[in-house]
Length: 165
Image (tube, rainbow, N blue to C red; front, side):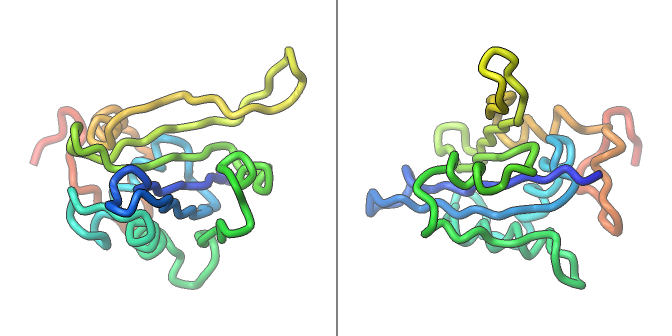
């Protein structure tokens, strides 16, 4: 069973033009928060060093870091057909999560909003609920030690709590 998600990269409030710059990437599997934290961390190896953050460049880095070498599993979502994140998510009803990622100059880190699709009994439909909002480094610390963080053929750049060496 795959855990599908869409990642939105947003530098709207950081660019000097005052224009909207949002890019979206669909990823097919391992997108629960414990996996997402790794996918975002892996993208840093392909992106400009922070604090430089541009949505389109980081989205490209995310694809480069997480794409299956044989193809598939990760793809860009063309946003010219969509007017909102909600519309993108309505077009991807099989996704369980979506992530909104930006760089916060005050925090000095990427900030990740995590949304999960949950069924609302009152209105009898699925809704997107914000379940987490934190700097990426805090997210890393929160999931250190999770066995789900180690992806095939990858060694994490940090050590689990209590790990030696």
